[in-house]
Image 1 (tube, rainbow, N blue to C red):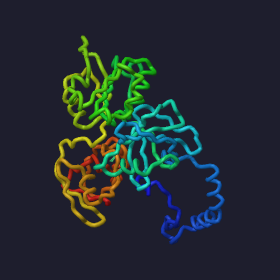
Image 2: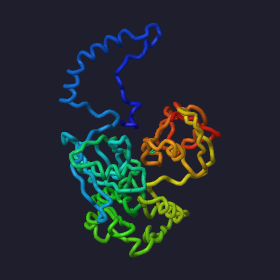
Image 3: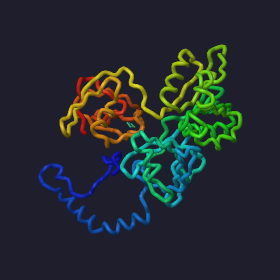
Image 4: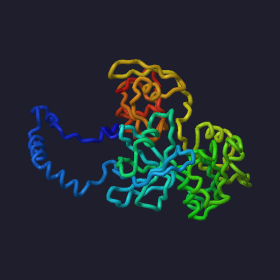
Length: 378
Ligand code: FES
């Protein structure tokens, strides 16, 4: 089941009632439904020969490569191609795709291949035993030759290069562990355009760091440091040398992907440094800011759940509905989208459109409630 796109599916199984209520079934629809049933085998055969373009960015791709990319074997890279090996939609560094897993889970993964290669996409997935099961499913069930459905690519972490849209004269990339994935194509682009850049890459140990071999070509532009040998990096080490310029001009643009704790420390460290841009992507939920406690009512059963000030609606719902869909937990993938029927949603995402919000939709991974109670269709 594709739980994300169900509202877009058009299940032509029965005719709707007549629009004006005069007929139990609309006569025109009965005729067209009859014709469709008659011609269905023909159209199905035609569609197999000439597949229609994917609806709403949905693509069916084949896994054409699977390789272990960290020495501890906990990170694998999967390469996808169109089943007919045709050109794939374009993407830019920082983009991710939404992968629909056989179980119905959806997970978002950064693209970490070469944007110049228009026939394949590559992602990398770390096995997380205590997570929500998505990474385990990828590791244990996806093999070369399997087909998967994806949506995207979409970009929530775009990069601008010096001289090509960025006011900064140089770039600093900071990656921790699997946070290397959106950064890898950024490095390739920065290198290709000849802009000034450097990178620090940290991780628990050399064994746990993915893509170490691919970084070798950048030589001393990349500093690798591991906690077991070097200890935790200081914020000054992460940011690297900076220069306060005479009129406060931008000195540096940082692109960072890593755990929340590192990003929060970095944000705090850079307070007052208006000359340093910080662009980042987390791979875990952001901390809840200004949260207050409220209640959620599940319309299907009438259950009442308390959402504490420091917990998301999604977390509260997943405690009683473990199958509730989710992926990014940061309000950008849309996998967790829900419908509310009462209460005043405090929207905290950047994804939903105003008409969607007005229709009652919200993202429970980040959004909260202004009123004491929120009723949701769950
Ligand atoms: S899980 Fe991605 S938007 Fe909520």
